[in-house]
Length: 492
Ligand code: BES
Ligand code: ZN
Ligand code: ZN
Image 1 (tube, helix red, strand yellow):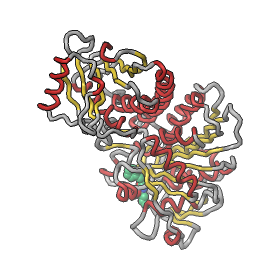
Image 2 (image 1 turned 90 degrees about the vertical axis):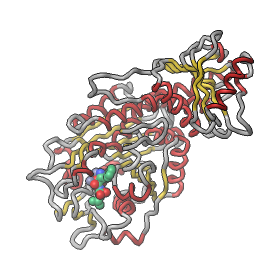
Image 3 (image 1 turned 90 degrees about the horizontal axis):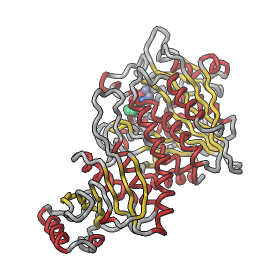
Image 4 (image 1 turned 45 degrees about the vertical axis):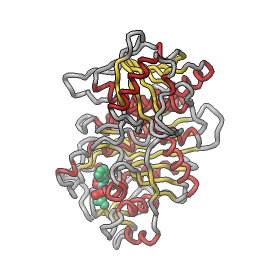
């Protein structure tokens, strides 16, 4: 889809579908239509009545445009009560896009006269999120929407809209990359393939980003016993991926991003039941989100140095798999009793976090599809946020809110720490209680951050949508996390 912002008289613009936002308060107002031919205005008003159109958020009606207009159809887009809420714009834009898709229309124009640049960005995002399809493995590809024009009749406004549009295009390219990676089956999205994806991002950055990749031997030298224990049951070699971005702008700040990169989680010998294993190709979504963030950096050039760590591996079953009860030593010397081989994400993150501490980051943010318990606690659409630093926690929360990704803080309850202390090793990788598993997983990871300000994001729910998550976010991989990370690094 080609998206552009331009100055034009909206009602004279040519497109198959002209999208006109309409607000419900104080009463249904067809304000932007006041220049229309009075006869057509009457027809529209009649249509709003007979279709019971109240301009509720996402409500749409489509009417044929009069003969003297260049456009073919007009879509009245319900915006709900008037507000500056970007999420309403996303939701409404998604509804408009879905309508266009349903009727196989290929060119759209949105009236954004008088709207802020942020609105243009939100509409762009929602349109691209809604238009996304994963068709790599489909024989017949569907019809595509070809053009979306964001139209303003105000020349002064145009530069701002264009700038915001450009940024959203960069971010959405990254989100699309992540969705494709996460949707790609594990047979293809191996640790090696993830490493290639990271290397490609570095390659495209024009030297702003460097990449270092270690295999089993390299990780052995660094004593990554926890990560390697997860990898030892797989025929695919693990790939420990280290991306580093050095800001071309002066900065003393360093941020570390760590993403879980389990390319398939069978559970290991603590094997998952079939239904729980079905979508476990998505267990690398945190790592993919980190790679996605890096794909934006050469365009956005944020003023902060960034390390991205993805300990990629499969979690598989073989004669060499780690046994429940095995005790391993992580690279910081901590011993861990692996009582359940399905609690593997925290093992990979333990060594990844230890590794990145060498870079002396001012903050660490990890993203991981870590626990089913997070889904139980917060449902399918909300990320669980845990932190050892209130300020960093609210910084990430704020970024998520602006980005339109849902997150909610959960407590790192001190009293629960004893639940991850082993009888025979320093730590055990599952808690002694079957309750509160999202928190004890967070507490486990905290053991490795050494008081560095840190935020843990358990994205097990929203990384993958088993049912649509919004008008603009359909089934499958969502790219969750990328938009929040962009917001975070731009304001770090
Ligand atoms: N990858 C899973 C968590 C998961 C579950 C992600 C559902 C996405 C959807 C993780 O490795 C796992 O298996 N966690 C276990 C931990 C338990 C053994 C303590 C879980 O949640 O059951
Ligand atoms: Zn697991
Ligand atoms: Zn997992």
